Length: 157
Image (cartoon, rainbow, N blue to C red; front, side):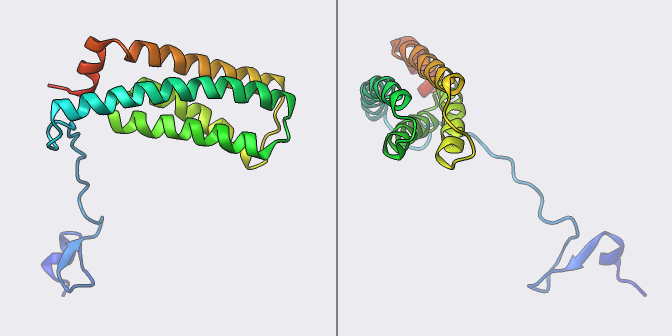
């Protein structure tokens, strides 16, 4: 006769406890702000300030390197440098909560990854797309520099 556990849709797990056949119940991800994690306002302000300065420099470098890459589309070093730069911007945005800039950077990173892996070849259309991505990142970055917007995005209530 089957056990009542089997009738309830449970099976004996590796640790000999009865577990749901469907597996563990999903755990809802709770978003925890940096402030809730113990980050003080001053520390976050410093991080954001550093991010904004570094990202501005990175966006300038991206512009220059994309123009160079257009002249030398086979340069693996330039492509790798561009990829690393946009990856850095994307990662910092994710940590600091700049969601829009992170999404734009992620799209650029995905395209650069395909170029780097040889799945795509650089052409005028892709170069235009990458330059447009850098321009969009620049617009997001400039909006992020506004103190009131930054504080609301970084330190949710």
